[in-house]
Image (tube, rainbow, N blue to C red; front, side):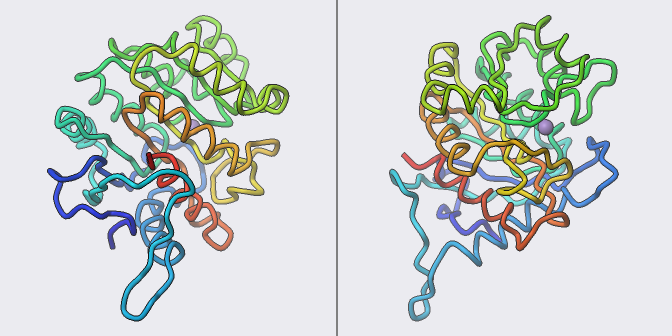
Length: 278
Ligand SMILES: [Mn+2]
């Protein structure tokens, strides 16, 4: 089943290339199920984002702007991600990745950064900045920092609320900016957007670990952490960040097995369409 909003029949005619990576080999969670996310998100997008009128489905449109052309490339293996991301950006299109565990973000950025200089805006409850262990979902920022064209010092992590001591040390050492969950509550989404706008000068890759959200909004994750963002706050920040100079987007770590009535998969679709509508 294709993503409900995949309105392009061919790769060539699309502005955005959506693909799934049903892989959780980079996860250290004892809970399994994140690899089910790409197909569950596609299924829920077809079930909940339209109204049947006669024989036709009338799709819900985004709140602001118009949807671009999206092609659903299907699912690919983790080892194919780097090459595919490079091919997409080389063709002046933008990738939308459905994870899978968060370590796959490194593969995409490896591909994109072969073509363009990028910064990242990383929404996550965790800094993912472990350095004592590498190439898994806890070391993503450390792994990314070794990519030549990824500008770590002009990047930011938002929504962080359970850092480990080792990660706090690495954030300072590598000069990665953060807006913690509490800080976001204090300064609000408009100031947060201002901060993103003032610090980022390159193309922007937006990576979303769904555990950045409060468990009330996104229960379908492996590590629900209280005190997170609301759906509206995340949609606002993802959309307005992406509008600045977005080059790619990922939605990671949805676990359909942990979900309640598939609301986390549903939110994944809302996030995608609201973020890329122009
Ligand atoms: Mn993560």
